Image (cartoon, rainbow, N blue to C red; front, top):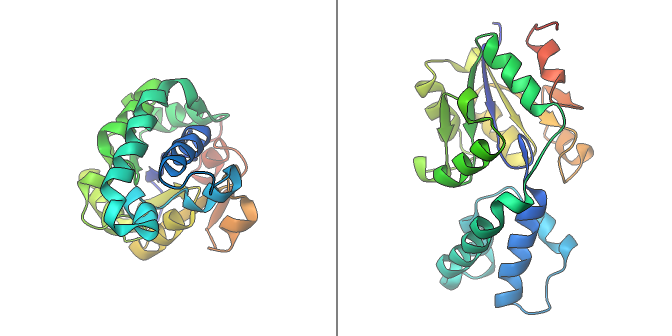
Length: 214
């Protein structure tokens, strides 16, 4: 069936929040584990929910670590996020052609909206599913099913686009097609391990996949 619905991860896919995330992790980890973590050490933490990441380090202090992270992240949000090449133009084109567009993220809903508004993408999305909108985050299929329900769509006409393993697995678990992004901070080869249906070199590659020739 033809793809009519496209779901996107947010961080590292639609918006370049890599520096913001790295600095937020380093700030938090330096507070709780002084001198232990360097920049390269936090890359594996990018993607899963904060509760999963910090819970694996110290279950007893996970709440305060998440609070420390989010306080820093919000304070430095607008100064550190950047736009990826061709994202705005691609999303605007998809919206103009009538595609149903949604965001499925492990970020909190309100924080996700901050990023979408800052990058002028918010008007194009009819649905944003954040961490606080679900019981089980990606890679569980629940967030994707919830987005499809809001968008009145079905798995057989949907595509999930993301930069991390939990995006690919969530899509596969939900029965939708998947597209990895080659600009993922963990690298193209890392994502290819999870066998996405497509690999995007830049976001505008999506247009040909869904049949738009402009």
